[in-house]
Image (cartoon, rainbow, N blue to C red):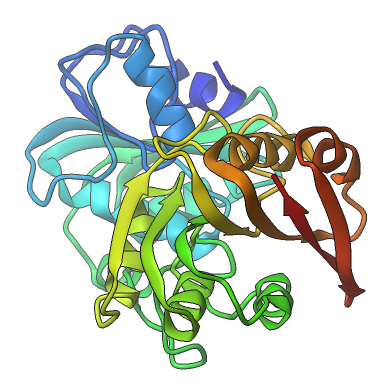
Length: 327
């Protein structure tokens, strides 16, 4: 159990069992009677493995006695998720929100007060803070939070995106560098590992004649936004919510493009990227190509040399390096 989840439920133990949890993580008090939402596949799988029912999306309507939110780090996303859960509560329902002290937890009490929550209380524990209170009448701050955190077309990029996604309001520099390095002859069946909202996928599908293409991401929101951003593409594209550190249900791909994360979940630094490399190796046909971009300081060379027949560093610039590896 992570520290934020432990802190979130501390004032309410034992849990009543009639509630909704946004950003749910493993906790012994969770029951099958609760609505558990988790859009990150790794954490959703942990809940499912415990026999709990988990959904990647919050319901559109509800009438819950209790609502809980594990606050994401992005401020607009945190207010958005809190506002959404608040709307799903009964008139006298209780809402509790918690975050790590260094990742938005210190904002929790202010968020609830801004949203008109009554009798707000706060508890600090486990390097985190939980704030809770009774739902009041909906106000303009709630409406504003719902607008600012919702999916929308970002003018600067032309892509549909949402606060909380990686590089949500700009084109990531690493992805731009990788796109510029791709060769002229990619063909066959390919995939984007960690597709995000679809920048690399759209680039590949517009530039090349691709037979089949797979868009994988551990964030359910990203998969759905990628689908939206590629809806005009006339190609056979498949979308899937997958934990790429565990594997994907495809083999014998001709090529993969990827810009793997390095700071999600419980692992940091190069651990996740190394697992992505392992999944890529097992998903490519013999002779298939991996095109990958990474922060210049992350040590992926050993993994590439062990899992691929050959690899080369194509370019290093602006703090990033691009690799081409052949299975």
